[in-house]
Image 1: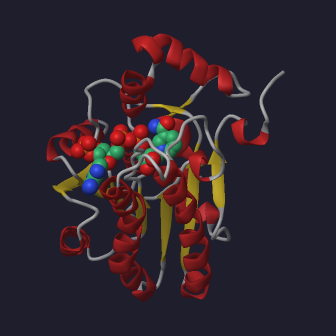
Image 2 (image 1 turned 90 degrees about the vertical axis):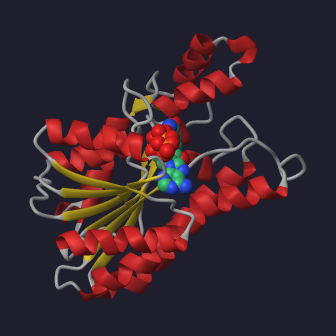
Image 3 (image 1 turned 45 degrees about the horizontal axis):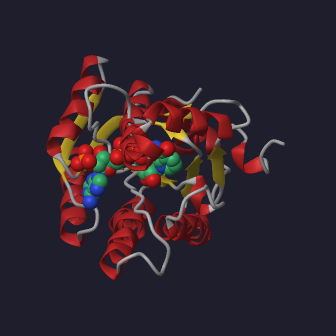
Length: 269
Ligand SMILES: NC(=O)c1ccc[n+]([C@@H]2O[C@H](COP(=O)([O-])OP(=O)(O)OC[C@H]3O[C@@H](n4cnc5c(N)ncnc54)[C@H](OP(=O)(O)O)[C@@H]3O)[C@@H](O)[C@H]2O)c1
């Protein structure tokens, strides 16, 4: 089940920013490599991409990385070209890069709004712009997995309007493109993480914890989830691997929500 031997994966945002823990992109890359896929990754900082590369190689996997800015067309094109020069094909594209900035329309500065749209949404247009024509020409087609967030489905307790709007847009971008590419043997799906414990979540705690009480911030996040705990990067990676795999060959234009039940609940009384 879920073997991906020899499949070529292009993934963005696979960097591991800290020595401890696993980010979502790093875990997806590691899990895909564990299933036999060859990883080619683009990340803003080369140092964090190399941390993921080392972890994958230590476990016997194959991973190349290069510095990439996913908001820059030339940089994305260079990433795709380098992957094609190395492997001659791209079977799986994973768009993982994303970040939340706080604010409502009145408080958010225009440049912050624009940067959020570029990072969370335009980045996915750019990778698809260069990769879909390649997948379409391959006899075995391809599979795209985009990483959204339950913030694109619900208000999740803090104003982050650009993040919510762009994460919702990813889902519809994916659906519409999935229909266009359905008869070309290219599938596109979205994985929708809920509250996930990653190094990024630790940064959020530093930024948002009232009175700097990070433990209490984490406890509150756990308590919001019907399962009583946040997920981890592996929960998201397992869903992404399934959507990328041939076992999901009849699934396209869908969202797989990985949230411990939170979007099915209106909270406890
Ligand atoms: N953590 C959660 O609770 C949660 C919940 C729902 C959805 N998500 C989504 O899951 C995805 C990953 O989240 P995460 O928590 O794993 O975040 P993360 O650890 O911050 O990973 C994001 C990665 O993207 C890279 N990156 C940032 N800007 C980039 C750019 N312009 N070009 C190329 N790479 C860039 C970062 O590089 P550097 O190493 O240089 O920083 C980092 O490696 C995001 O789309 C996020 O919205 C997360």
